[in-house]
Image (cartoon, rainbow, N blue to C red; front, side, top):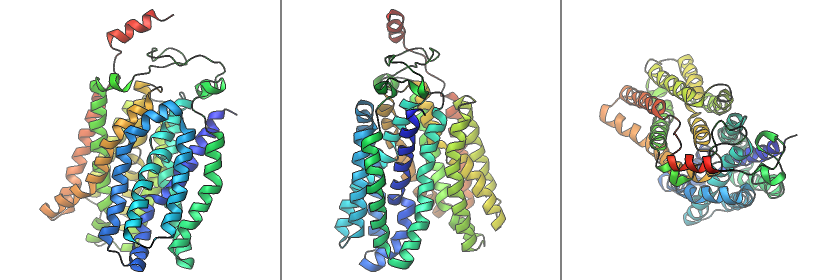
Length: 420
């Protein structure tokens, strides 16, 4: 069995377990924590927001380290930080302790267990099957959030919220820490392999032709920044994340505004989360059979159509239909973007390039719900919100269509021609 599958399995486990510190999971812990400790919801939510934003800001620092040292030291560190975070949350007493533990812990685990580090590992170990590898990792965070939320709620109902965090900490310590420390490796070349399991010890060369057998182009971050394509991808990705989070965040409020029962609205939200988790694997698998850029354009246009369809949703059945359609089409945007980056710019400096892109996406993640609320307050209607962000998705699709594979600069083609 190709060793890369062991790498992928541990990366998926890390992304799954780290979801216990995600916004989705913390949303079910918000009320019991604030009620027991007497904190305001605004003050408590501030730490959750700050942790998510800081996670995007540290990614440009973590990315080059992932290229240089590989996932073993970084994922092991992330797993230990996650254990410490869970144990700290289980023993909270003061608000400053929550900020100190959660903001730093969330930022580091987001980058090392669910973001740039596992994505870099998958990019290094797979090429022909890269789409499914990146998709499987991406689907584990939302899937983990949904599953851990159910488990955490069951523990909370019977024993309290502190034990839920304690159990997650013990599971992470027993399972993830030793596996990350003992099994993870930087690249297949370290074991005498090549991506996807081909035998041999061929060195990883820079700037090979995209069609040159088992090798691929390897752009540095500085070289990638000089291409128009990278900036088109960044802008498209930021617009997509903004639109999708705006619509996803406000959908429950819209459902209840049009008379849909709260229980049906929450059920639709859960269906949306599970459909979104499956979407990452689906779109990743499709990129192994069809060109990645047209797939991204199609997915984005279908997402826009789903948003326009939401304008007519008035029933619980319609809400469930939207949840499936929008989850499958919108939640794969990060996977598709990472696949395009890997296919266009190669694997040697993927960590640095994807780490540079991450803060722009985190800005969209944070701004989407806020911009949606601003549009609603100005228009006093979600019709304007969904119409505006549906148009934003169409614009993002156009930018993705323009983001063609960049040609190697003349000096890199000359260096390639001179290579033995």
